[in-house]
Length: 72
Image 1 (cartoon, rainbow, N blue to C red):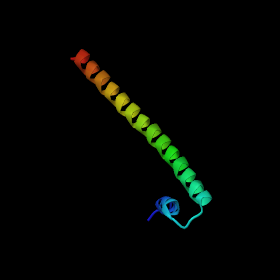
Image 2 (image 1 turned 90 degrees about the vertical axis):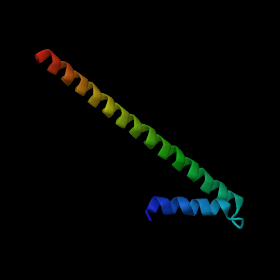
Image 3 (image 1 turned 30 degrees about the vertical axis):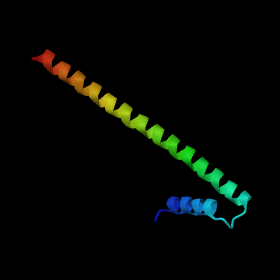
């Protein structure tokens, strides 16, 4: 199991543990929320990168097809 998955699992375990102090649960929950924001930012950034790359490739393909048509 990767370290991040293990870390998140431990945080979730702390949050649901009825014997933990509320302060500790709150800290764990805040850390999970922070990780959620970080992961969402990462996903958004890389989705944009993939979308932009696909758009550029499509534009290149269309330009190449246009050149091919003009050269015939």
